[in-house]
Image 1 (cartoon, helix red, strand yellow):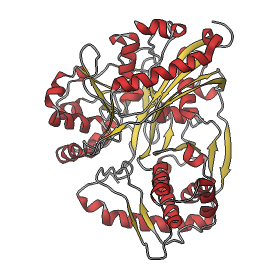
Image 2 (cartoon, one colour):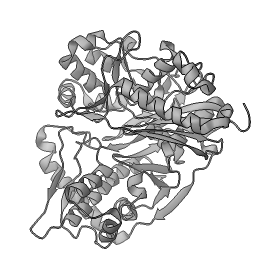
Image 3 (cartoon, one colour):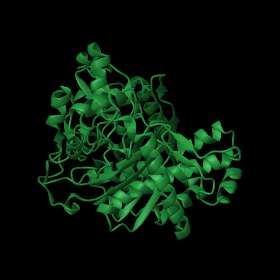
Image 4 (cartoon, one colour):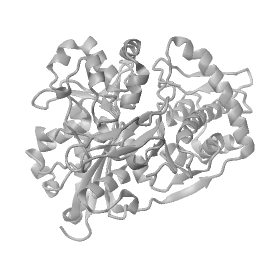
Length: 523
């Protein structure tokens, strides 16, 4: 190795893969930035999927580009970190070959299976144990749906896995097909108390734990590329690759939101708000972690893990839980409306939007174009816009949609603050807010707290880098490298009052149009 140790990151997302290079100060190394864009395949019945071989090609091509850019600095790469999307699943044969496509979190075909599970299981107990509700996004519903619709394929599957487990198996052999505690926590099958596969949920869906990967913590490493990959990425042959971490967890770490004094917001196509803390500081409960972080994930002994109604609880690692809300509709609301309503270019829209007082349009919008995850978790929820008359303009409809998204975040922030009253700062990232000062101001006004934009453009990649550096011993703590921040938007008290009133109307419309459909939301 020559020079300062560097860390390469693979940021594998739903719509693109990025490969970047980082120094131990958490700074992006110049001239190394590869990206391959792609699209999941949709089906008329609500499916969203991609063949595993197709994702593997995109990731491999992106890594090829990056290693060409790295050039002579390849000898300084000391670790590889991976960030990837939670909840996706595929079935593998005993030899590691895919038997199914990758089913994305947004695949809604398991909605019926989720309803069936809610009818025969104690949903609140499942949520308390696993941190996840019974919803089409998670493994219990997806596996139940696959049992019912593809029984022959289901029986052939030797192991159900996330995309990262498939990739590690391809690159390092079947022995590397382990799942990180972070990725396991987003399946709906992890017991948050013991940090092992949840026996009750597995029994309820008729699945053996042997058909899931061994759970490891982030210090576990895969090393020694095999087969064709030895020559393809020769500079990485003996570099340790650390287990994949959920992109939301990486986003918190990468934006400097390492404690519950800072909430992280991300608004891209979808959106999320999250709080991270150390198990040793479990709010309103006393938790202790036994053992070291080496190798397999260590059990976490907790009298009652904190789970908030309507929100999920995942993990960064064996010591750091993460609680938050995820919304299927974020920037996609803006994109859909600007395309459907044939609105003018973004720069013109920004001026028109900024000139409009909040709520003056009199419209109420439910932002569920992609169904509902947090807070009601109703897969049958659909978007609705009420209050229109002959004078309603397209720009008013767009403003109503953007405000509606901000108000859903405000609801989630209220729940997080009920457990984390020590909140001092909200840090926001994602292109949707970064490109719209008007929308950023709406978020601050709706939440009633200052919102600071992250200056770290690639928070998930940066978080993956810092976690890999910590696991490799290159840094002591992920918080050692301070995250850069950008502009802060200060809430207007008068506008906050207006949004509170609008939120009451939105909640009333939600109760009238959605709750009566037979769903019992965890609220």
